[in-house]
Length: 126
Image 1 (cartoon, rainbow, N blue to C red):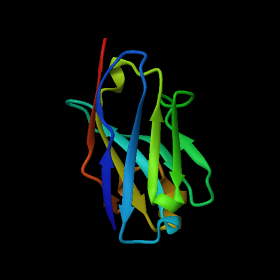
Image 2 (cartoon, rainbow, N blue to C red; image 1 turned 180 degrees about the horizontal axis):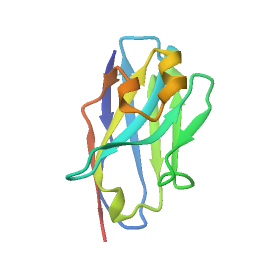
Image 3 (cartoon, rainbow, N blue to C red; image 1 turned 180 degrees about the vertical axis):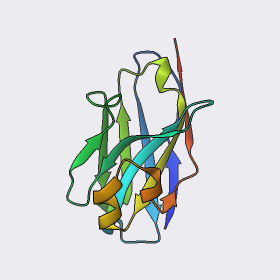
C-alpha cells in the first residue's frame, strides 16, 4: 500500500485547508484510514480516523473543526481543516491499516497503522 499526502501549506489563523491522501496498491475500501500530526519538538499525535463503514473519530483538538472523509471512486481520503490556529502547525501524516482488530482496539495509536504517507507540512501564522 502506498500513501501520498498533499495539500499542506501556509495559512493565516482562522483559515482553512484541505489535505488529501491518495491510496494505491490495495482495495481502498478494505482499509481503515487516519490522520496524525507531529508538531516541532513533539511526538506524533492522533487527529482523526475513518472506519470502513464510514464512522469517524476525532481528537478533542480536532472535534468540530476538522472533518475526515473518503472518496472511494478516487481512492482518496481527505482532512478538511477549518478555524486553524498556530497550535495546528505540524507535519500531517495519513496512515492506513487493513487490520480491523487493530483499528477497533487502538485506532488512536500510531502503532495500529502499517502504512504511512510521507507527510505534508501545515503552517498556521498568527
